Image (cartoon, rainbow, N blue to C red; front, side, top):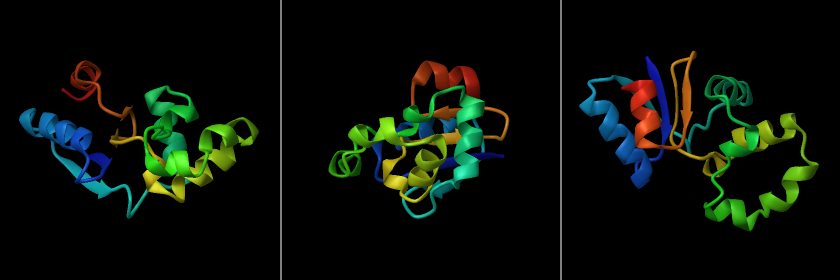
Length: 117
């Protein structure tokens, strides 16, 4: 079953949920702000989605700007980045969706349909 890390008040998450529902795909919704994925889960999602760790950041988020993450990133190790993200779900780009074999970060309708449709 798919695990859908999202936020109910997020328009992008709602669009992604709508696509899954229209395709008849069942999933488990996890509120990313209350129960963010662990560092290990995030590492697995990065591998499955074939993206860099930096792509996991919600760069348009308030916390990303307030904590000045962009300035900190060059000095952080992969482990530190994963720990930072796992400790604050508001820093993570959403939705994160994975079935353990495949994963998507964010929402792009075409890519989403190719992977989950």
